[in-house]
Length: 382
Image (cartoon, rainbow, N blue to C red; front, side, top):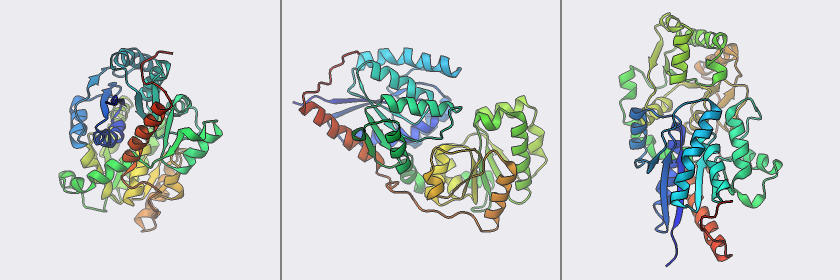
C-alpha cells in the first residue's frame, strides 16, 4: 500500500482564504492526499473569519497559531516559532503557501529549513518596488520554493530572470478566480445591494488599505476629497478596512465623509456580499491586488491607486488602469467611466476556474516522480 501524500496548506490573512479554499477542495478529490490547514492568525477577526470560511466551504483550520498583529519582524518570527513544532509533529511531504503576506515567507522558511518541499501559489508576481513588504515576501519565497505556480506570463519571465530553474515553474492560472467563478451565482442572489440601498451599475466601490495611501495623512485627505467630489455625481460605497478606519479616526477625518450625502460607509463585507457589490459596480477604485484580478474577470472597470502593480496582465489584457497615488488622475479616469468610456478587457489565459485542479495534479505527479527516483518523503531536517 502506497504512503499518503501529506500536504499542509497555510492561511494567514483574509485574501489567503479565497486561494486555499479551491486548492483544499481539489486535494480532497485524491484519496492518497492527506490535506491539512494551518491558520497562523496573522490577521484574525473571529466573526469575519468564520463567515469567510463558511462561505468558501472551508473546514475549521486543523491548527490555529494565534499569532496576531505585530511589526513585520516580530510577526514573522512568532509565526516561525509557532509553525516549526506543527511541522515536526505532522512530518508533511509538502507545504503550500499562497500570496505574499508575512505568513507566506515565515512558513516557507520553516518548511525549507526542515527539508520539506515548498510550493508557492501566485509565484513570480513583481511590483519591482522593494519598499513594499509584500514584494520582499514574494521574492524571498520564490527563491526557496520547489514548485512555483504562476498566474500570468510576466511571472514566468520574472522568475527566469531571477535564476529560477524552468523545471520548477508551472503556469496554472489563478486560484482567486476559481473561488470567484464558483461563488458568483450564489453571491448574485444575496441582499448586499438591497441592504446598502444600491442600484446595479450606479455606484462606485472603493477599497483602500495600503500604508502608502492611508498612513500618510495628507495623501488620505486628498483621496477622501477626491472621493467626495465623485460622490456628488454617483454613490460611493466604501467598506472601511480596519487599518483605514483606525487612520481616519486617528487623523480626525470622520467629518469629511459627512460633507457628502453620496457616501455609503460600511464595515468590511463578507466574501459573497463583496463579490455581489463588485459584480454590479459601475467602477472599482482600489489598491488591492486581488480586486484588480477579480474586476478584470467580472468585466468591471478598475482604477488602481498605486504607482505600480504586480499584476500587469490586468492592465495589458484586463479592465485595470493604474493612476498612481494621484487624486486628479483618479477623478479623470472615474469620470471617463461615468461617460461610458471605461476600459474594456478580456479574461487572461487559464483564468477559467480550474487552476486548483492543475496545481494539485502537478503536486501528485511530481510526488510520484520523486518517489520513483528514490526520493524519500521522510522528515529529515536540514
